[in-house]
Image (cartoon, rainbow, N blue to C red; front, side, top):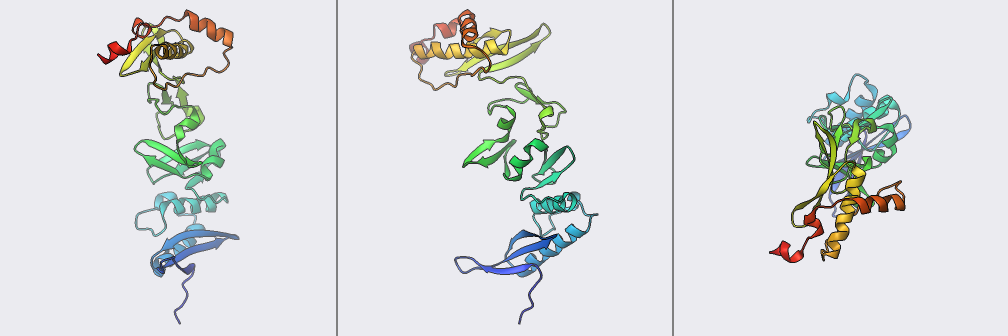
Length: 269
């Protein structure tokens, strides 16, 4: 009779293929360590987990591609060992923040206020964009911090300490919160430019405040719709501004003649 390896449980897929589950129980908590094609790998994962949970000299930095355990599980086990809380996602807790480790070199930082959100959501990456699956949709995580999907780092927002993987709230400074608005800094001061895209970018005007530029963008939408443009523009919503105040600013704003006299026939010519 074949000796049962510790931490290994044989299983069978629907097509009849055998595989081996690995798991460990530590301080009354049962933790799955993954599935493997051969029993020796499943047992190896169990032995690595056992050493990791009992040897405090091992750290996240001791991980290598030669390990059997996946990196995410390595991080989860170390956090459980050091902080007494197990997360299915690769989170390591500190006193005032936590890290979400996508890899040994891709380490995102978040405030503790975001712990519940990311402890139950897997962060994925596409290029420089980080996103999670939320209610069946792919949601760019920057939207959680008031950064629009179209925003450009350095123009619309910046990371205060220069680390673009540090998503702590105090580290994110947003310059532009409105559609079609960008902040311009010159020696003479700061102003805001409103632009709208039709079949190319059209400058609506330059304004003293982002509020004025945002309303100018909305006004441009109204003008273009009257001119026959059917494009589905997203208007800016200005929270905290009364309808009367909005109407006053709206009526007084100057708009570029190219927008005021826009013609579909001329644009297509």
